[in-house]
Image (cartoon, rainbow, N blue to C red; front, side):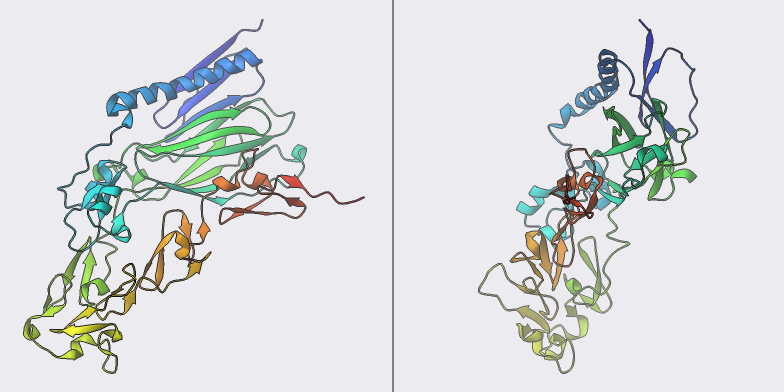
Length: 425
């Protein structure tokens, strides 16, 4: 019987799976910010199973370590309810969210707790990890004419620390190609781990790629290599010029100051709305910058008009001491808002008979879509799960995933383009 040596190496940024047969070529030193994963598809069935078990061992150990350190994550860390920083809040735990609503009595807590405290969903900042396939070309040439082909080719990944994202990587090889395959990973930023597991050792070779950020990097940890994002990470089969490109961004900042809304309608167009609070321009003041020092007791309705010839409070409210008080609607879920009552939450595009498709909130005539939903009417699902074929390829490698539905190439059909349309001879 031929003897085999099986090694499982644990690296900082990834798990290196190696299966070596007959001869040990010796260790290989990875380049800076580079890790490796090696796979083989020629061992006997029993050896193959043993390697799978060995490959899973580091992941099991890591899970045990995390469970020991966090109680199995059955209970999340306590959100910092007293913090005044949105960034500190969302970095405390993956379940923590931040309320941006004016006059909120609670800022940092879990999503459901903020809702129960009266914070509207549209004001809750709760970033979620997500992944989009940017390039997913199918193999169009005969298998024997191209030595190697990777699918998908490019992905965009947004990571919230503590939440992982994974995707299947298909590696097509020729029948006479070398059986051992080593994957090099370069450009990995500090704090990000990329691991591999071999799910299917046929052709194509199916490799499950897992990406996770342990924590947000501190400013002192940002070296020249890690100073900007998104980071471009390349997964390259050794000896090949082909790579899978990952554009990785970390969801570590809120941007409520940098991306504050100037002259916001929430601040009566007289102040900047930042992190849930109005910063009024002089000489205005008040929770919504609705009051002016020189006209605090003025009954002048001009302050309740958006223009000289505009209706008082847009015809949707009453002017009281220079400030609009908007009318109430018969439907309690419908309401007017804005300095001049110019906004509402019910005049937005419909999809499938539901406002904002049932996957978003109508805010001043525009749909604010939920996570993974896009489009003017929030009618397009950006997830690709429903497009995955039984062969673990998007639309079975025979079409494009559009809004969660496969658009098949000519001659193919089915929910995931799995069927070939037969034409009569």
